[in-house]
Image (tube, rainbow, N blue to C red; front, side, top):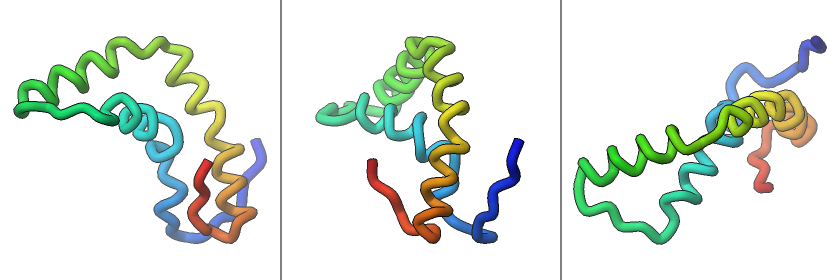
Length: 79
């Protein structure tokens, strides 16, 4: 492993932003959830339906994503 230099705090380095939450956001795009139960059901289905590879791929891509943020001096990156 190579230790990457990074700023002491950068919200852009949150692992959840890169893979999981973007996919979750896409799954919610254009949907209206009528109530809390509908939201809970959607979330449960979202997580259960994702194959193990989805999570593994997201984790394995983190170093590359972090490096992009570092190379961009901590600026937010849209991809």
